[in-house]
Length: 136
Image 1 (cartoon, rainbow, N blue to C red):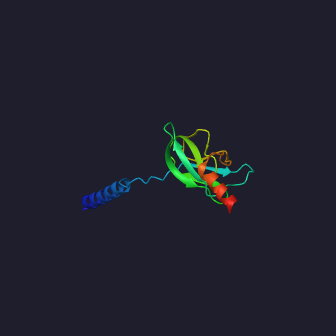
Image 2 (tube, one colour):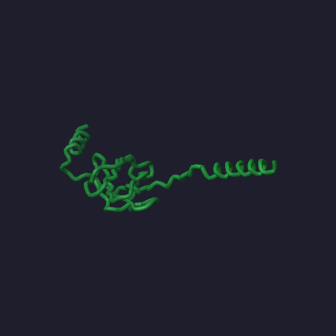
Image 3 (cartoon, rainbow, N blue to C red):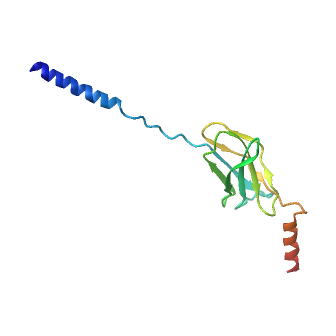
């Protein structure tokens, strides 16, 4: 009888220890790579609703698009590691490219502000709008 009780206790203990070791590991999500910056005009004022493109190098292919908020800030999240440029676009403004930069590890990359000026003369759309507004 004593052997049966010891055997039962042993098997019960063995079963619980096997159950405790059979749990699946839970992986914690890693922080995503983020890129942020600001777009401003020549007078240092933030520019709102500017289209901002994250371009992957060396091909300069567009990866993610964003727009600047009311403070002129833009944000990209979940950016894969690699080399990139930022391009800003808006009708009536010059397209601007940032200096190349690298995203290497998880965390946030904060870029220097990008200053956009007015488009140079020769922009047909802008010239048409200017002449139209003068005639009104």
